[in-house]
Length: 397
Length: 136
Ligand SMILES: [Zn+2]
Image 1 (cartoon, rainbow over the protein chains, first blue to last red):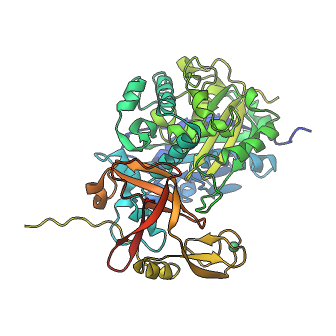
Image 2: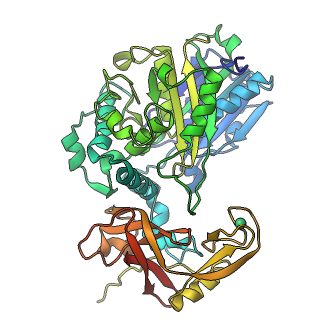
Image 3: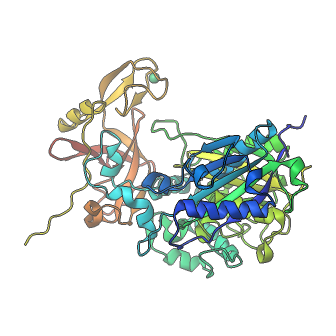
């Protein structure tokens, strides 16, 4: 029997601000710009919106991030659904999931889900925006201080260590990781929204500086200011709304956690597996049905290991799977077709989600995929600790 | 005029970890073991994160383990590390099970490898010693 949630919800609005090194707006202002654009895109008025889900980016931790106060900033009265959510990079997909559940349960009609961030200050490096905590003076407390004492800093360290273990266990190569970066940049050259639009070669990849071996600079995502908002509505209503509906056929989550004891394989076996099983089951689909992927790509390695966990290839075979360039333009499995977080913009889980919406609507222009019938969209956060999946389609059935 | 070398972050003992740091000054890798489920852990908290029991005992680990994974850091994060770049940051899995973030020292030109056998090598500071590891 088909799951009753399959196709119950649809994404009906998308609003995006300029993204990247854009300055002069607070995160509240950016969020308001994105929400205004999403409401207009959906053909709604502010009064039609009765749900608001909010996700701050890194500024939610470092200061100046959006929070519950956004409701009042937007002057939204009598909301029937409201929360400020944080499951790191998996939040965007999760907001769509909770919105769909609430709508299906009759708790709300149109839920706006918004992400905003502004970690970049004029004249500072991207690294400074995320590495700030590492420079704090004073003694770190207790056993957790072993991280700082070992110079184990930022997100770069755990992802490099995860990639290293995959390379050691399965023979994954630097060229295979580089192929992902090159393919995504090729997509970005076709995306007017992308921050990095100059094509790169594998040689450029190898020549980019080391951040932490085995990760080069070109293995790592961008840092961006900006905001993205989406609106989730009931599928029945979506048919009557102006833009092509983006139906939510499958949803799932998987959160392996971050344990420091024997037995955990967090480096090479991620929450994508559990999330994928749930989402595929709800949709009644499998990896062979997926025609395009928008995968959370904080690092090249994240893409590789995510493909394995969604069953596109066997565990450990992600390297050989990607090395023919099948993820890039013209390839057999178009993936991160806007350039992703590596080359387009870093709006956490809104990066894959926004591009998935663009592709499912057929709005991809020069980068439109040949078959958009089943698009897998994922979010990942922490040290491969949190994961959420959406299976999206222009068809409800 | 003198320039002060910025110091690295040195952990400060807290209640949960105090015996670990006392042990460190004696060259002992002192850990907690859950007496309910038997799983050993780093002393980060009162309860066992495998079974949630608060019953535990202290014991001294052998100091032996293997490199679970590692990376070679080139990025400038903390001024205390600038002089050592690039350095090898690793997760070592102790023979008793717990994993800890550390550095691999004494490689003498060799590259670290996943699975490499290592042994604790204490780096002494004022009131704590830090467990680094060298090839066994
Ligand atoms: Zn226990």
